Length: 145
Figure 1 (spheres, rainbow, N blue to C red):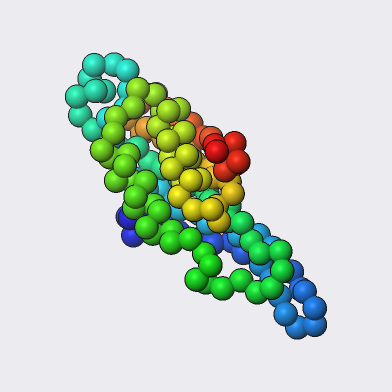
Figure 2: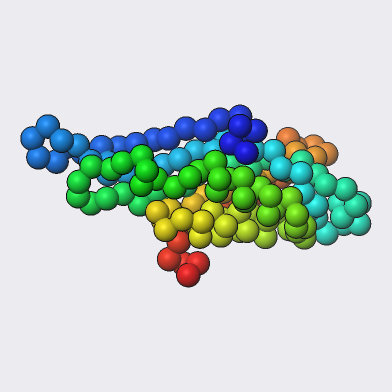
């Protein structure tokens, strides 16, 4: 599913430990512009056909406080994004807020390594005189448990 996004990037910050070794102090994963077809809205025409919704997700990963970080310790992001997209496509939502909250919950609870998620969704066809309507929500994993 990440292949269907317009961008995927990782922002890693490292700090020097002792001598020549470094450890990852923070890691953010960006998945940009995933286009998901979904039934969303309260008006009857919105409930008939799936609409294009553009989703951007930022996942904040928990990092080790000591020792080097290995790639195998990272969550499987393609699998996580694919599962979120499949779950969403199979559902319908009355509001964009509920839709985004579902994305955030699914992403946060998909791996214990993910401690915070921000998701933004936009409906390009929602308003006549604007590019899109949108909602952004950020939640910490602990607030969802």
